[in-house]
Amino acid sequence: MKGRHADRFPNEPFRASAALRNASFAPGWILDKGFGIVAVAMGISVFVLAGLLGWELYRGAEKAISRYGMAFLTGSQWDPVAGRFGALPFLYGTFLSSAIALLLAFPLSVATALFLTELAPVWLRRPVLGLIDIMAAVPSVVWGLWAMFEMVPWLRQSAFPFLQKAFHWLPFFQGPIYGVSLLAGALVIAIMITPIITSLAIEILRSVPPTLREAAWALGATRWEVIQVAVLPYGRSALVGAGVLGLGRALGETMAVTMVIGNRPEILLSLFAPGYTLASVLVNEFAEATSEEHLSALFAIGLTLVAVTLIVNFFARLLIHNVPFFFSPRPLPLQPIETKQ
Image (tube, rainbow, N blue to C red; front, top):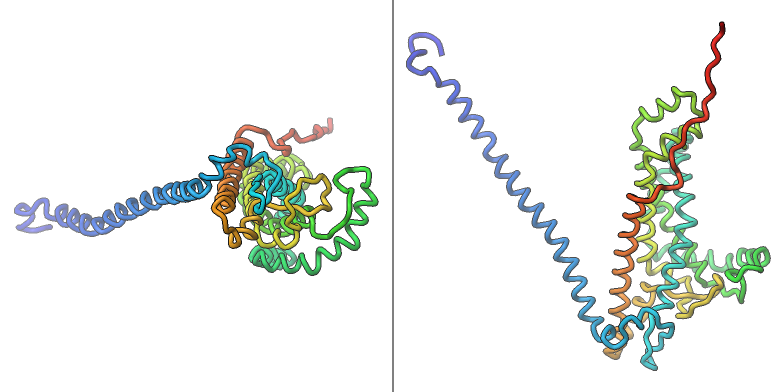
């Protein structure tokens, strides 16, 4: 303020600005405080829901756990009529089918992501990315129907006889060919998790700083050397995490696997033989369980599936943080530049 009233109100501009500042920031402070409270409540609710899930599963499985103990996990017989319940065939089928699916899907997914981010032209990249997103959104029951009516007959008539003829000396490719089998279940899981891992791997490779690529180019690296020493080492931990997410999807996959795996609770070395998974037995028998012992055994199967998923993710985190991946950075084989005298 200027003029004859300046001495009477020396701090009036500062008071006005402070009042405006308080008026403008008061609602924002309330919103921030409220958002923080809601976020904390949501975080706590995750642990509460997980605890309730574990408690309900344990309460339902308590009878089977008290009767069988660890023998429930090591028993190889599942006969609800005779009252014998052992989950080992389901554990075997779950781990074997998921491991085969991951071994098939992970290299293909990483290779596809590298091609789309590092090599493919723009006109090809966009439609392929759209196709990958569509494949990831297809429901599992649709994949199961396709596998049951298209893939399984082809496997039974062409692919499995060829594999048996080529690798007959291995026990994994011996025995009668049924079509529906552990290998068929693993193949449909691999097809389902490939677009998921590919989408995650593409986002991971896109996050690599351009300066890493430019530095490798400046040192005279070839295109493959840029991928080998700059791109893959930067994203290796995240790529392993993408594979773990795919493994989690594989462990819990239900409908598509149930339609093609054969659903026989046996432990056989042959990949052509039918198998069973933890999720499949829940779908097939939960609605038909009449006795309390059978129902309790199915609750124990569900508790085992949750525990297996948690253990796999725990060891995967250890793998990500403590074990070097096979894509380890190596020095570039650069030749010294010759200078003319």
